[in-house]
Length: 198
Image (cartoon, rainbow, N blue to C red; front, top):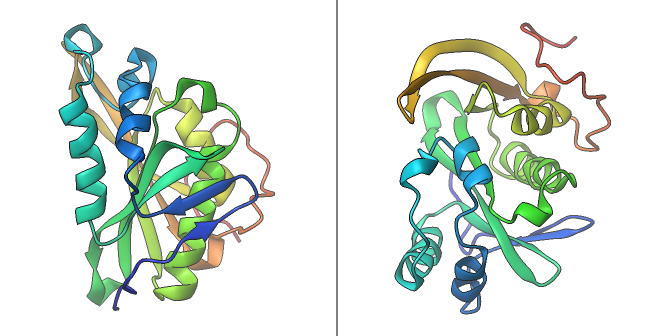
């Protein structure tokens, strides 16, 4: 598997997934660190410090330096990131990681849209067989987004995340190419079922 260079822009109905541009640092700085979002990402929000301009610039540089990462743009501004990581070429698989960092963008289906675009790219352009990720069990919004794209619950890693002195479980989810629904028309039950879709 060879990643195309440059990484292509992926467009959806409402989003543009693209490489970073100069204005992204200011967009990222303006978003700051929302405690609700950072808790869902596994941060101890009691220790959450305000985002600095240097950290916002580093966020952009990290995306620019990653071979398979996109800024999620909505309405002309950066609202998050999505990337493919931990490629295992022999097994034709990779991890997918997404973060919507704008609290006003939550609950609008942007995560589902971005996941669907990257899954289509991974399966159709890169020839991957499987995408995987882990989600904190209490992050039901993220679990629903993955489910709408076709991810299946494959396991539970008990007490694998220590957040603010409390242990939390991680849900392991995976998407096979044959289970992918590019139109995301799968109804959301609110809970990922264990097993395979037929």
